[in-house]
Image (tube, rainbow, N blue to C red; front, side, top):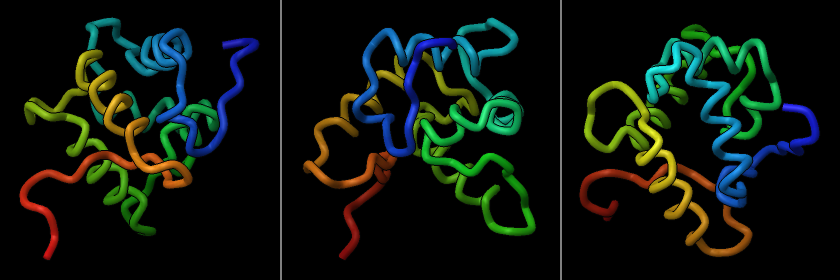
Length: 115
């Protein structure tokens, strides 16, 4: 991933080419989807990828970071098949980039809006 500048909170601003590179790095088995295990392993081995997604480098149950990752993952996995497809990733990035300027990119919440 030489030459690609990744920074914290950059998911919404990611170019199509950068997003393709990141997705390919995360899809370690090459099946066209990212599962939780792949995401955790890539975050551990490539801190820039973790920061790109706004996730910690080390995802652990004990410190709550696993719960954060689970919540993030489920919100992007719109069909609840426990994998993030390319289409789901692109749809999320489009929604995140439409967020108000200055706000951090976060997965869109499911269900009714909070009261």
